[in-house]
Length: 502
Image 1 (tube, one colour):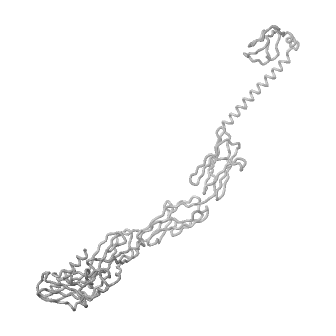
Image 2 (image 1 turned 180 degrees about the vertical axis):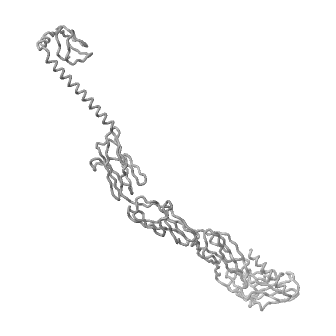
Image 3 (image 1 turned 45 degrees about the vertical axis):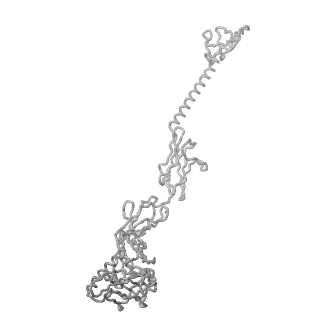
């Protein structure tokens, strides 16, 4: 173990200094040491004797209590039962180191203990005036945790955890609750204890604020003790946002609040339009007579560590429908198309009708672009006007749109009317002319003609096409030329006029 080697090295240095004092019987031990029950304890010990150095086989080290109970002997068979397998000599007698280790420590191991050195063929000496007592504790002392009162986010910091123990050969294991670079050092104390200082270096962040930082020492035997502190990390404002009511009616006033998280808390606030114009300062901002389309706003929070801004917010302004001037109707041939454009929030319910509001016409298309709703009505309309009605929770509005007459439709109607008038006029004229002509003819001739039309009894019924009549007589009746007629054969006397329709 590193601490054990460090302990031994320091002991060796101490030994050399002690030996240099002169050739005499001398012992250096603390009057008492403190140990943890269940852990281990080391009684540091250095001695000197007259004469030259001796080889190890010539030296016998012994530790015993006032009751002559042998706690340690170079010959392990002579160790008392109570200390068997629990005591050992950490030092090297050749180097005049007589340090004693007892592990695990028991409550009965309080001592006092006396060291005796026996040198073969020379002398034996008990250092009765240099007795050592052991104070056995049930629980360890908590470590001392040191950290700066305020640490800055993003700036490296070093914290320390210090604790005492009495077992340099098996020092406690120390752990930190935070990640970072750890280094440790051990220092021997005057009372036979050792002080261990563990350092933790890390770079704190906002997440470390009010976070618990602890160091824990676990001693041989399983007992452990911890020290805890709360980190105080300073950082600039974060999570800045504008807090307001969920909605506001057009024309009302609304109070906006700037919220932020920072350490220390923000001491100043500023309000800006989305274009960066400063409009107010302070934690709250009251916007009066809110318009339906206000410019987005954001706030900036400032503390000693820096500043940060929120994202711009668009107020949720409620207002009744407004039917825009661009709403109109057009027509083409027999189809009319009407557009109704409504600006409102929330979105409006839009209906169409002509003369009867109860007879709602179905819209053919609906589009929404932000607060603007465009509804299309398309089809044949039997009215010169159509009504667009919009309503939402804030109110309603109605606009009457004129349905224009289409130019092509009028032209066609006029053309058809003129044609029918011309045909009717021609028909009337021909009928009148026919009646005038029939009154100027001789009625006798008429009868004569009828009398001279004789039937040929023996003639056959034939289907012939007639296109002319004999002579140069006028025909005043309507005639269908090239028409096949099935009739009996008649003979017509030359020179007679025919007035009947054929």
